[in-house]
Image (cartoon, rainbow, N blue to C red; front, side):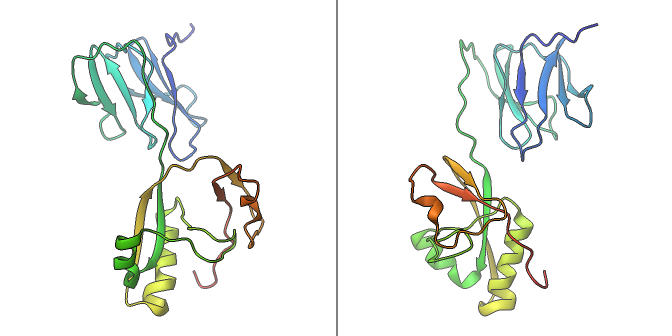
Length: 196
């Protein structure tokens, strides 16, 4: 028998997981490559419009006039507000959490001036961030505890990435990727650090 979803499908925007959320017969399922039949998250959904990913593995749903935030910890959803009767649903740009590791001595300067671009690096001048907290923590170790600083600091940033170029494992120490002006950010795979 077909699984009628009534069109309420939302991609899982978290960390590139590649799954989808589907409401079928009032049940919210999370479908992934590993679980193609879908993991049942919660029941009794009567959505008024499409769902919107929160960008971190959860989603927002308007059901029976209530805006609810559904996460893995709260699969029935936490009611955010009531009396909704939408004719459409709006989605803000997904702003991922990124991390920058440095020495604690830089705390006041970052507080006063923000994160400033470096003069150079593997991808040229810029502010270097990672989506992996553990990597940022290791970078903070290199610059702080085991480096020239008195301690370490990991800065958490929500960032609008804009148009991005992916250099993979390539190096671009002169930052030539910026010359066309078409892309505002660049991503790449950092080679392993020695002793980390």
